[in-house]
Image 1: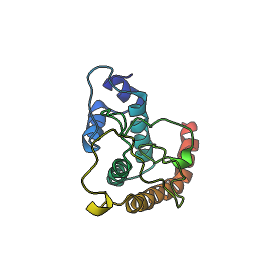
Image 2 (image 1 turned 135 degrees about the vertical axis):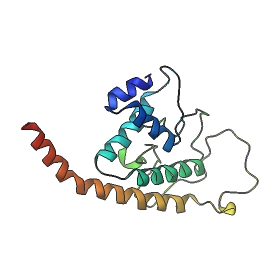
Image 3 (image 1 turned 60 degrees about the vertical axis):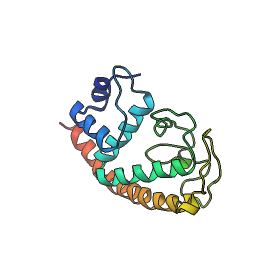
Length: 172
């Protein structure tokens, strides 16, 4: 577990900057050493993507789509206040994981399948099914694929500049 100051030091960012990220991404804040490795891993992902010139607004859009997809898939089985972050930092099956939450979908994210109807939460069922209320996991997944695909293309495009900057920085 980490303190907020630990997060700032590890990420080489000010506490003001991280506090802003918490606010804009609607992340819970904790007292003392209340921040998990998964919380840190999420922030590292955001910082890395920002370093690669991915706009924060795009990341927030993707964040909201991922959380919506996780809600539709009933991924909150723990009741944890950070349930949407708890998979961050996992390294197995990267092609089956969402970009920001790192949640494993059980099938390749950019594949054509998704196992619907799983409900890991022990809650009272809704009066109407999600589709009847206008929510469709496949539609949200398509939106996710579009956004994440654009981000991954932008990252690939930025890599030559990052490599050149690293080579240049070694000479300093």
